[in-house]
Image (cartoon, rainbow, N blue to C red; front, side, top):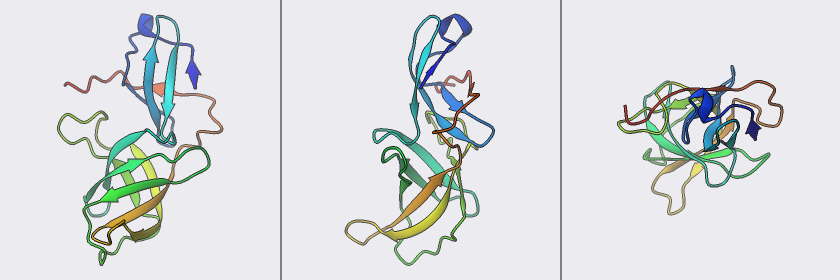
Amino acid sequence: VRIDKGTDQGIADGMPVVTGAGLVGRVSRAGSTSSTVELVTEPQFLVGVRLVETGDLGTARGRGPDNPLIVDTALGPQASVEEGAGLVTSGVDRSAFPAGIPVARVGDTRDAEGGLALELVAEPLADVDRLSYLTVLLWDEAG
């Protein structure tokens, strides 16, 4: 996605991009008057997340357009995660995103490869196929 704001307006590579619904992605390339946004659904996109109800951490990754996110967790396969559970950015130390940005809702769970952990299948909250307005958070991950 291309936006009509860039470094002249204070935007830099890596800054989070959101809508009222939640995380859309991050600025992947900022030019002087325009920028490119890497969407949360892109296969190379990774974001640290936290389950709202329990505080458990994981890493969500995109799988391409029209596909849910997959969240790798450290939860054991016997753990119970409710359908509809909320996921927000984790904001752990030196994270690429500030804490608490809504990301997705859990739709299903399954055993991760090897069966030693639980994997979550989650639907992004922001509809990246129908974007009208975006907000770039002028946030520096270094602090």
